[in-house]
Image (cartoon, rainbow, N blue to C red):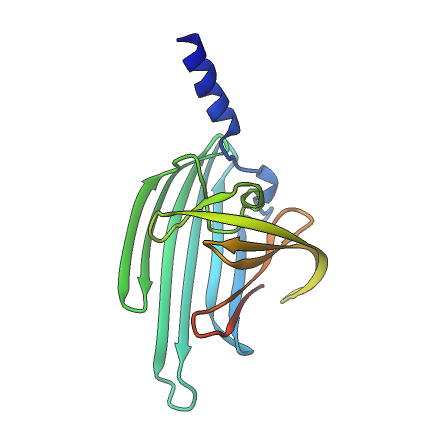
Amino acid sequence: MRILSLAAGLILALAPSLNAASIPAGGHLEFDVVRKGKDIGDHGYRFNGSDDALTVKVTTDITVKVPIISVTAYRFQHQSVENWSGGTLTSVRSATNDDGTPHQLATGGNGVLPASLWNDDILRAGKLLNTIDGSIMSVRVSDMGTEQVTTRRGPVATHHYRLSGDLNRDLWYDAQGNLARVSFTAEDGTTVTYVRK
């Protein structure tokens, strides 16, 4: 029985947790979503509470229009709420409209960090929770070194990482551990970039 208790304690100790430094001082992060040089939407995070009891609301609203005739070619809307307790994810609820295909998710933390990207602890996790469908994604991380990126408020010194595997993203975090930029290749081969406001 004592061995089982020790094993359980070790598992809890090794479970991924929240780095409080990743919570931005202003309580929010906002990004323009840019494709082919055009702003096609917004992505944002709202943080309420503290490391002991934190709620993170994530919203994405993207619309791609056909040039000249301005007909909507693609629409993506996502809202999720992450609940954290004592630095550990306890639940995720989300609703997603992926160009007319709806997704609903309500799940516990399952000892895995969410793939919402704001928390730089994901760089050490190896597995991430897909916040759209609840699947577990295996990822590898490549350290791309330090780099200065442009935000709407000017240049920011960052560290660049590349996720590959079940999720492919280039991520830049500033000196405070806050997400500064995201870039990825969309299904149509174009590059989509989240530029911090």
